Image (cartoon, rainbow, N blue to C red; front, side):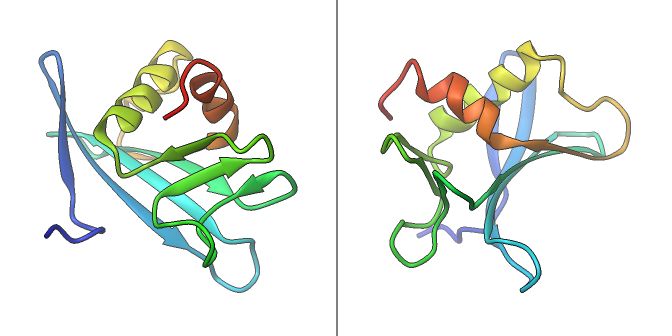
Length: 121
């Protein structure tokens, strides 16, 4: 059995991406689910962040780890490689993949809307 916080590999063409999913909260901000991606061999990190809010749900005792759901009951599982690939492709199509070392943070909900609109996974 794998550990949820362990880095996983995703191969896209000639690129290898390392990714993980974490649940975060600090008492001052709503719970959030974070999908982190890093192209192997670089220090440029893309963090796709899903914050809980009206019409937006993240794991809080009712949803399983990695689940993000909207008020239309569309659910995506961030632990699924195919879902991660779709988020990566959507971020790429929007020109949002990081190229310089450091962390680039994106709101995940606009990406969610684009991805969940064409899939029921």
